[in-house]
Length: 273
Image 1: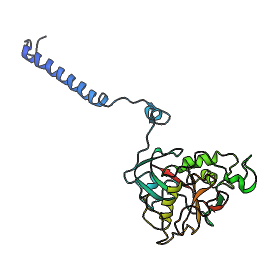
Image 2: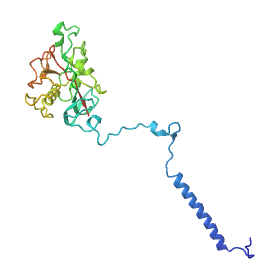
Image 3: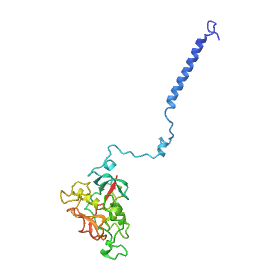
Image 4: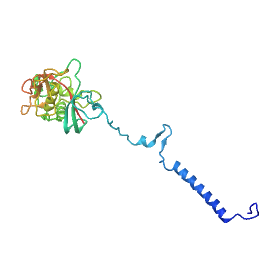
């Protein structure tokens, strides 16, 4: 093809035009790749504009960095716990509470809120266990598996008492505690001997955490607690017709109002992690 002067264009000019066209094409490809290739393609449900993967994969609930004790954050004694009660015991390490939601990863104990009108009163066991006689004799029957005293053993004790034939919430302290529910939490129990002692110390405004320290009749009794006997879920070995109570006025445990047919106060507690 001739130019205006009747000459063919030089090879260098044609080569330059070809290179220019290739450069422009490469630039377009690079631009398109930056727009359409870099971001991964995620399928979207057109009905909701939500990525399908997010509808299929479980979404973990993150614990907020500044979460309160009730929201799953760290707790100290006196905090409101997830069950709506007050934290009265904090363990330095995890403990096991078989039957509780926290199971082997428990760290705290909280007491249920004080009910309007004060704590309910119940006998330790119900007086209608078939084959155990009538009246007070029935309440003295041992509940297999309810002798443990340590921190974390209250739930297992409570379940053992609940499973004893004839025990019902209307008359049995343990069954009342087991059936208790608050703030959507249902894993409450009657405290073991040691758990009850920690609760007594909290009620008396004393330092908790050292299970070797006994509750004493010093300091002020907190509002919501009574200077009276409260039931634990621990039977007294070897006298299995008796169970450990504790007086929140004197701090004394056992061998007074310890007969299972006696009526003492009940405060459900729960373990959580």
